[in-house]
Length: 287
Image (cartoon, rainbow, N blue to C red; front, side, top):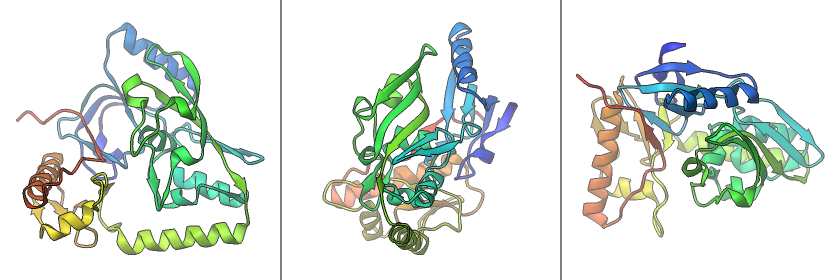
């Protein structure tokens, strides 16, 4: 698709247009796109399901690659293999059906499998590196590569995937046999906690900031009297201060300006630097 509105593909409902929006259906097609982009010197950008992402108002030049059509999930014994475009929530549900434990923590994470590996997603005491066995990626040159989990440098909300220019195609998770009712009880409890505490009634990018050592980002923002603070249509959530919601047709610039305002205020009040967890991509809008 040409000139596709990216706000239709992000959880924040923010973002300008992509020059070319491509949704390949096979690994070979992904490889072909990467090789074409290299050959013709066309920039390309990976877009997961847009959950932990802000796309700027000027959009993205070149090719935007979305792997939403690569979304199969299969299980073999205690191993679950999921393609990059599958939602990590659906992988955790598939594990439940197969009576496999280990992915309960992911039952409320809205990202794709590829995005979950990209940032070593985690919640409620668990994270991807606890259960990841290996990943299939496409390199910058368009080659297929299978990497063990320990080759991805999975740390708190980070990996070497962006630095190496990898495109994740598939992940293999190593789980354990468990009891269906016990797994479901944990997932139900975590789902209740998420729904009762997080502002799911408005578009948002999820948790905006990483947890600073010794602190909680949401508590620092709350103690800075920023809950409810609004710039344009972007607002610090009244339900959870660690979230910024798109309350009223916000622009990406307003959303980003509010992030910077929060960082500045918390630094001045508490001397703590809040680092973004959310990724910002794209170009500013030229008036």
